[in-house]
Length: 168
Image (cartoon, rainbow, N blue to C red; front, side):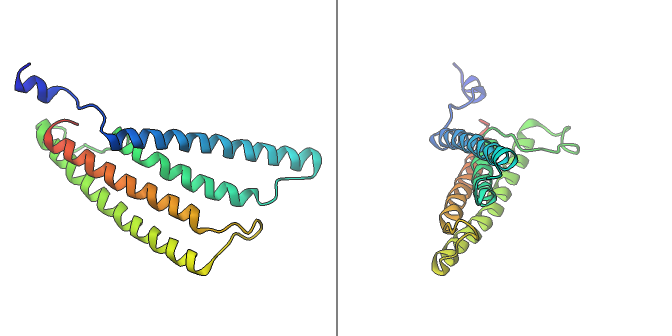
């Protein structure tokens, strides 16, 4: 195999990319459980006049966690929407550098969001804020979202490095 052949071969998924896939599977399972919770609550409300108390609080937390669990996998698979209207005429290597630049910008923006989420975790931990009906403490859900946001930052940096190395 020549050097050009080796460069053309895609790299096997890195540990962080495999981790993002596992997290996405857990997020899908959480989404299914959330849907089941909603169905049971609606059936209970309609037929037995007995919905699940606080179901909307559980759905809010679970949905936030599920969404954050899908983002790293989407990034690792290059599944985000790309608009290349003005760059299609450029050489592939140049487009790879442009994409790597935007991956770094994305990582930076998500880094800001991650810091804000961790700040929110600390504030909610100190204030002992709970949900209205179920009195669930809020900070653990925020902490999970913050950790998943950090994973997204790492995945975005990984995809940028792969693009620069020519092995997306």
